[in-house]
Every structure is written in structure tokens, then in C-alpha cells.
Image (cartoon, rainbow, N blue to C red; front, top):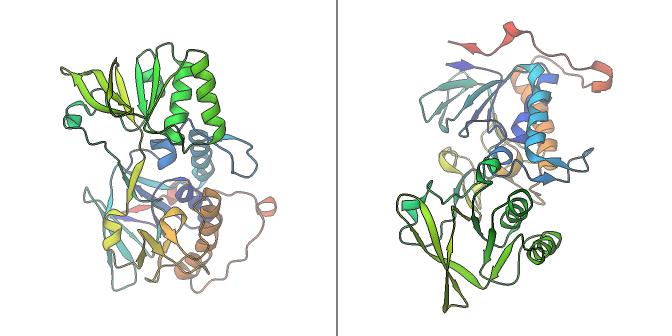
Amino acid sequence: MIKTDILIIGAGPVGLFTVFEAGLMKLRCHLIDAIAQPGGQLSEIYPKKPIYDIPGFPSVLAGDLVNNLVEQAAPFNPGYTLGERADTITKLDDGNFVVTTSKGTQHQAPVVMIAGGLGSFEPRRPLIENLGDFEGKGVEYIVREPQSFLGNDIVISGGGDSALDWAIYFANEGSNPVTLVHRSDRFRAHKDSVQKAHELQEQGKLQLITHGEVTALKGDDQLSEIEITVNKNEVKTIKTDYWLPLFGLSPKLGPIGNWGLEIEKNAIVVDTFDYQTNIPGIFAIGDVNTYAGKLKLILCGFHEATLAVQTAYKIIHPEKKFTMKYTTVQGIQGFEEKETPVLI
């Protein structure tokens, strides 16, 4: 059993920042995440994508933001249970919660903060009969290690930001052909990205196929060719090493949806006073929650975490009064190593 003050479900940017805010109040945190590394979507889906709306950073790569948040949390020695999904929650007679993961690891805390982003993600798969035969053998839904794709022929499908961003990246960084296939000639991505894609096409670095759709995959043990149907009647065959169907990810709350929380449109309803759920002691912060006027921004999640920790302190130490001081006055005082979460 891992015991801590605040148990955080989700080690994304909002969960990591919660560690810092709780640490300023001398509260210990432990994080659970189904992904095998901290960072959530930022690490798993687009570590090389720039983010522009973090105060003080005109632009910061998603992966670099995660590294900074991990470093910021480090003085408070958070515990991590990674690569395990939070499955069940039980409330004990003394008011503490016990959360058990998919691998049977148990955690106990008086406060639970759900910072699970949009939940677990599943890629939106195209309807191609033998698609499963090539998953992991040339068909990839997420770009985790961009360098491993360089030097290969790549076909990308999609018309959103992710498809355009990676098409532009590989066209600029790689030496092999890159083809972008989209079912329309109108893109959902930023206008600047669309303009860059057309410029790369003029330079011969990117082949852009509109009104087209990948309809067949070929190869022995590894993907080697794809068929693209253009304008519903013309069929083109292209040799390729990788096909990236980037049609987005479908979010699911997963087991958390069965915890007795009030759910609205796949998000957890909270009170905006402190972002507590309908179950006292359980909070939901970041993209996983919903309320009137909700904006799904990392910045908003940071704000929600800060207020949630204030109430968490009162739950954990009802007999104490905490006076907040600016960090410019009190500084950052981390925990000693001996204060790591208790294992029993």
C-alpha cells in the first residue's frame, strides 16, 4: 500500500503542476498514469509540437514543457506509479480513499485529484479490411520517436493540425518522399500550416493529394505499398515504409466513469469554488472536468489545481490554518528524502 497526502490520477502537465502547488503547502503527492512516462498527451502524442499559450514562454515544445514541470516538482519528491491505469476506488471508514490500479497496486490518501486530461485515448481507425495486419508493421497512429521515421518513405493521411504538423516536419527534416493525403481540399489545420504545406509542395519536398483516400494496404510481413483512390475513381499505388492515418484520437474516461462521479458529456462535473466533484475529497482538474464557461487549456488547469489544493489542505489538516505567501518571499523548500511516501 502506498500512502500519501494527495493521490493524483494523471501525470500530465496539470497533474505535475499540482505537485508543485501542494508541495508549497507541505503536502505530499503521488501520481498514477497509464502511460509509462510523465507528461500525458504532451509526451505521448506531440512532444515536438510547439505550445504558444503558456505565460512567459512565447513558444515552448510540449516535451520541454513536461521536462520543466517535472523539474519544478522534483524538490517535493513525488511518487510515481506509471504504466498502470487507475481502475477502482474505495472509501474507507476513516474517510481515506484506496485506489487500485490495473496491476493491483494499491494507494491510500485522504484526497484524490483526477487530472486525467480527456481520459484514455484510442486512435480513430480507418475502415480497411487488413488494417490490423500492418499495425506496428508500417501503420502507426502516434509519432513517438520522430527520428526513427527519418530515412523512410512516409504517407500521412488527415487534414487536421497533427497531420499537417508531421507532414511539414518530415518534409523539412527527412530526405525521402513525404505524401499527404486528404479527403478534401479544405483543411482543419491552422492557415499558416496549410500555407507551409503548399510551399513545400512547390519545392518538391511534399506531395499533396487532395480528394483522395487510402483504400488498400499491401505487403508481406511489413507494409510496402498503399493504394489511394482519388476523386472516387482513380487509383494510385505508392510505395511506402510508413502510413500514418492521423484522424485524431477518441477520448474515453475509462474506469473513472464508474466511480459514482457526476458525468456530463464524457467529463466530470465540478464546483468552480474548488473544483471538487459530487464526492467530497475527490477533485477533477484540467480537461477531464466540465462547468459553465469551461475552456480546455493547460493554463486553466493550472489555475484549477491551485484552488483545489487550498481545499485539499483543509481536508488533510482541518485543525491547521495555512497562510499563503508569495514564493518570492518564502522561496521553494523541498522535502527531505526521508519524507517520501510511506510504503506498507
